[in-house]
Image: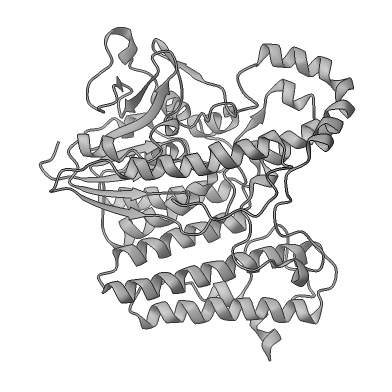
Length: 466
């Protein structure tokens, strides 16, 4: 261990980890910050393993490029997750759609800012409210013919709804997915201390998997006694850290069974401090505070209530508790966190993921800027205004991509959003903060969508203001 060391702490958050990839790109490529220690949880564990293959500045820069390319290769959920057989048996039934809704499509965050429904023209732009108990029960009743085979599948695979088998294969061997495999031999080289947070279900304690596959106790240093220390294949540790309970199955390692360490430590700052890091960068994928949710929770089904209470409110409180770990006086903690929620944890809308990566880059630039507090606050306000307008643009464009000929009012609304992006990015520049060199494409073109641009849309959306 070096006398003074830098740590990257990478939080969990599913495909919200795109924000982390953008922040890491700024830290490594623009600031020249590289880690001696990486502690990570869940999706952050995958990011951390990719990054931990580097040692030199050039290798770390290449790793941040790989992270971006890996995320852009995730164009379908089937590339990452597979349904357990009992869930697949329910495909096409109302009950099966309930599961699909809350695992994939319907957990996209609400669009920040104003409701675009009137602009889009009837196309829903916000996640719909929870189904009533009556509608949920009716859906189950309609699903009854398929329940016997599903029940048999459930008996064989009772621990989860999905598996991480496709992602495990993609990270293990070269394939056609475009996701680069992880090389454990590169990670095991001297020069990086890696800790992947996992929860031991049998022992009921937090543990970590190290760069060489050793399992250590919650102090991030002491190997587990006896056979429990492993070593285990590093990729198994990565997948165990990413195995969200109920969603993905637990994984057996050494003498215990493990799930996502984010249950206790989604932002493992403590582990970084215990490993002697004196400069810690905690990069968070999920906002630290929850905005008010106006949906009718009195009539919402049990899944929606659970997701809001345990999956959102309690989770946010746990993240804040992780950051409150008492650090030694000589230790500096820098937190780079999103203030806006853009992409769902299990969705792979490429345009939103690119947007979230760019947001991570901008937020890292805001946090790292050597400016007065007033200038930083102004820059952060401009960043959030630009990102809010870009997110609204994406949702409006997505509706126009799949709709008929756009109305003139829709084109003008889109142009006004693009102008808002331009004006706020220029405001950041006037404050002396950096901006990605190709940022002009955010307002002179369109966000990422499936398929070619509809011919009815102008080549430059700003032309609708003329």
